[in-house]
Amino acid sequence: MSEGIAFYAIFFAAIFTNNILLTNYLGMCSFLAVSREVSTSEGLGGAVIFVMTATSVLNWLAYHYILVPFDLVYLRYIVFIVIIAAFVQLVEMVIERISDKLYASLGIFLPLITVNCAILGVSLFMVIRNYTFFNSVFYGLGSGIGWTVAIIAMAGIRQKMARSRVPKGLTGAGITLIIAGIMALAFMGFSGMIKIT
Amino acid sequence: MAGFKIRKVFADDLGANNPVFAQVLGICSTLAVTNVLKNTVVMCVGLIFVTALSNMTVSLLRKYMPSRIRMMVETLIIASSVIIVDIVLKAFLPDVSRQLGPYVGLIITNCIIMGRAEAFALSNPPGLSFLDGIASGIGYSYVLIAIAIVREIMGSGSIWGYPLLGDWWTNWSIMVMAPGAFFMLAIFIWIVKGIRDKEEGESS
Image 1 (cartoon, one colour):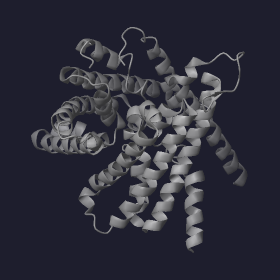
Image 2 (cartoon, chains in turn cyan, yellow; image 1 turned 180 degrees about the horizontal axis):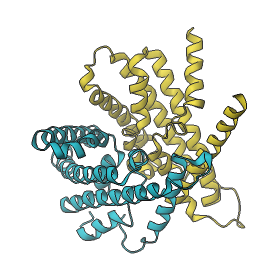
Image 3 (tube, helix red, strand yellow; image 1 turned 90 degrees about the vertical axis):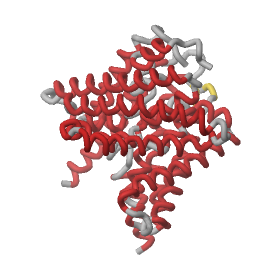
């Protein structure tokens, strides 16, 4: 068990040293597709933070109170993905009822999130690393924030870059990946600050 | 007719419509597992299996699925085939399974599989869908394997775990870490796009 690690260490590690996007490469698809404008990135980032925290709580409960006692651990992929999909659907319906404004800004991103590998990845990492409940909550929250930081920074860079001349073959995905690489290099500067495994 | 269709499926998935280059899909795992060749090959075999099997199943069920919940059904089908891969890996290749960790499970959210199910399997018969799954799996795999070869040689001076370059080689530790993966994939996309643009320029 990783009881020795304090929750705030996990929280900051998930944002900086073990950024889910830049060191674990999760959530790349939507990262590349949506990071064109800062405002849309902020919207998607907010949705990711919320869904990631909530699903890591739900999945932790489902794993430790349903799957482990009944010896059904091998079913975890199906259970996790169903919980994530159902939760996203539920949130979408609730938001649609409660607030039109929020739905307009967040609603379109929610379906995208079901297939965001980062969400499932966080749940799987948390199970593999045997986090306690409290640690899982902060791991989910931290990873969401880390992902958001990365996508907003990327969107900012790409907006500036719209006016610069990129080599022809590199336009689009190519240059975005190179920027992501440089960002990953920058985030490597944080490593050694906190270590989680 | 059938032969022609099959050839077209393969040509499309391996070349013009290659999921990694043309659509930039499913690159999460492209980057994560390509620092060692062995893991990459295992991952690719798993991915080809999952794509082919889930494509075929989706195609078999395509007439019975209500379109409102079809995404959910597709996800469940994919998840079940991934579980098969996971159990087989745990039984026969426990070391590799441990190193791949959560990335086996993450095949579920690999956009390529969902994309093929949506774009191809829903409108084509099971046999052809099965072949399309294999073809797009291979199209994805050869990119991964190419990247893994470069990364393992430069990052650890070895290939498939056997030392290749000897003592004089200083390992580029950046190649086995995250930034190396981003740079490699970007360079690959650059090369392929460059060649393609040139061909288009000549033909037009």
